[in-house]
Length: 415
Ligand SMILES: [Zn+2]
Image 1 (cartoon, rainbow, N blue to C red):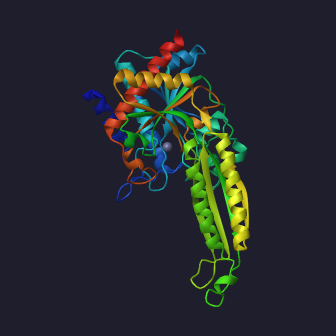
Image 2: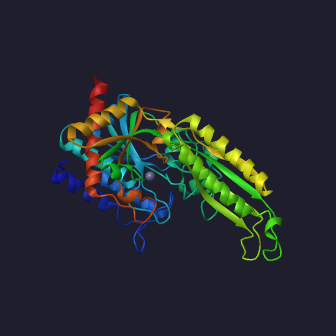
Image 3: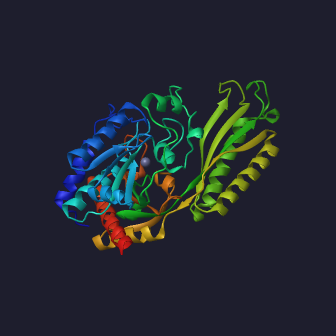
């Protein structure tokens, strides 16, 4: 797809604006939610908006917004606007594109639509604290204002220094119980894919059909810690060996459910006492299963439980499985998916329908308004890492498809 030089320059300039906050030696950034680097990112966002003649404001939980004159006029008449959003925080030692690309794309849409005299009511949001690195829970900013997260539940979440969200909000004059966001007719989010599907298939953009919900388990394996020299091999209850079998079983279960686009991962292992001359007596595993089909979730859980029972019996250990957290998968709005696809086609961009394995701010909106997500490829599928990279060309392509789809949506919605 041909990219107009001036649009590509806009994207380069927007991405460069956000370069510095939280930059680390050796590449990458750390911009934890409700921390100083994220504050600076939001200031840059609002300053750019004001300098370019858009209205900038923040809400009661610290999310920042820009809106065009058409959105302000619409709000005055009780009409709604299309909302484009993403986030400006990062994980520890994260990349420069996760979240930022989506916010920059929204800013570019505001600018391009005005330049082309195609303005319709449009708001662009930068949400706070999308990553769980700061308070152990993702999508806090968007979750609190949509009601997807309850302020009472969130109040006791703590940051790495042990401060609760309640304390941080009190210090900043923010409100854990904000007014629910209003005046939004549809929500669009552009985001880097964080996987390698688009790159592998050579596609320009991904139209997300559904965002996978995670179902997570804490598994504890109780064996017996004994002397590693004095205990014969046939008299052991080695919790770590049992864990090894269970980890491979989880992988196999994930693989066999892959045809339903489910995945299963053991991401955490804690081994006790974790010393050289003691047979491991106690192991904890953290298991993350994700998918978009409830049936597949159920099967994965059942098969993990059966595998655990078999391994426990075979190895003389005790295995307990507790469900820790669950969020339901969310479907994206078919009409918005069509609009994104039509826009991609009309601009000559190759699109691909896919699911999102990762959660995003779009999850917070999916129960509230028609919601859509557009993915752009990222190099090697790498994210949450200082090596994360997406070209300005890829962001520009995505932003142009997004901009066209927004225009298509609001024209369609008006007629
Ligand atoms: Zn993100």
